[in-house]
Length: 310
Image 1 (cartoon, rainbow, N blue to C red):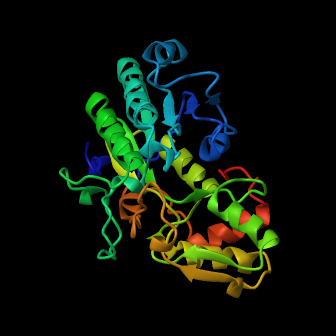
Image 2: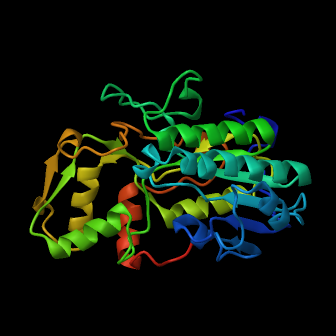
Image 3: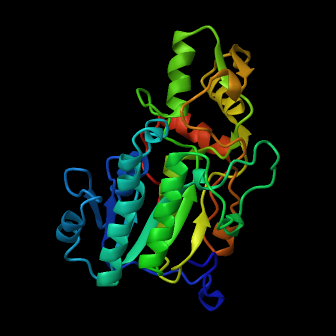
């Protein structure tokens, strides 16, 4: 897989004549993509990506004009530490099955991946990760990260035209949701104070903005065989993000207090620094995602229910 694309075609926007087939249409990003024009939504009841035969049946009518966007994954990061096979099926075997289908029919595949594929910098790195920074010998710290990386490599090996998009810290912020922003909104109403780790730094990404970016990518038939990073611009710690949520809903941000990862051990290790650089996205001529604070403001104003603005 290349980290760049043919410079002769850079910036040539295309019109997508075929369908947008959204795998994992029940998730945060997939649900938004599935509302777009010519979209075909496929949830768990429609396709089991870990079952090659079911993938072949569900995608048997693909054409070269179609774009398949894979938003499906095993995202239970802690559970993956003990249920390795479930993580492997969802994050490696499933994407490989989709890549075989798109390669067979000549359709395009956009595969969504994660910042967890990078090794933990153990507090020493403070430079955003570029797609090409991934050492072939490096091992992600968690089972989730290792299986997602294996999925990237499987997709690239089977369908070299596939595009991998890594993102991070995705949320909608919807009331009643389980993402970080939604959780902070709930805890603000339930507790006097909340302790949040301040030694993990990343790129919060509003699902609406990511979905809009993926739709723009789907309309660029020249962008194949690339690995790109797509997050809202800028970075912060979970502590910073929590304070921004409190402030955004009119609560006192001082009610959020800092703590350390060591004080809240989890089964799966978390990256201390996993900020993704957006330079590859901009170099491809794709519209940049706005800053994370602006994305958060929009999410809180929309109550996390708006669709992509494209």
